[in-house]
Image (cartoon, rainbow, N blue to C red; front, side, top):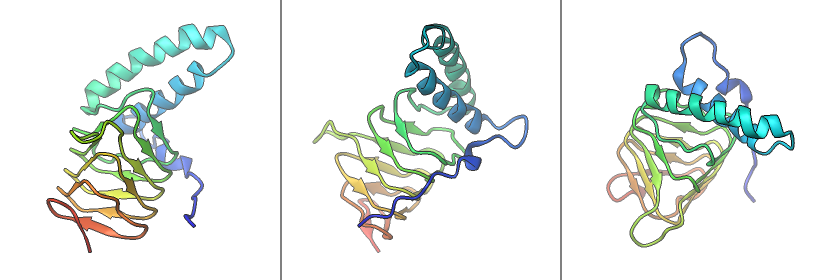
Length: 163
């Protein structure tokens, strides 16, 4: 049975004036909130304002994180430069994603990965294809993951091997 962690929302709150990665996440969260609202003003005007802010913060951070992706609460992006996430990828609560990561599909499958709660992904890692990264798993820097990673495991190398 997989443990489901509660999101630590404080991890996403800006502590200083200039924290672009957290501003990007706030924009994504607000867009999703407004887009799913029944209030017509929220749905039409404020969601469009969030799109403009998303373009700005995506440009500043150098990250390609779509507005409609499924990201659990408490995501940390200390260095968001070069982070690319597939729009249909699912990322669990309290994950840590470093710079230059790609989370997406491969030539064998058009289904993106599912990443469990509290997963740490090192810089430059690529997680590609229809696979599942388990609870509290760790992905090493520059690893290329194309197979499932079990709970509490560490995957390193090209192609990634479980330690």
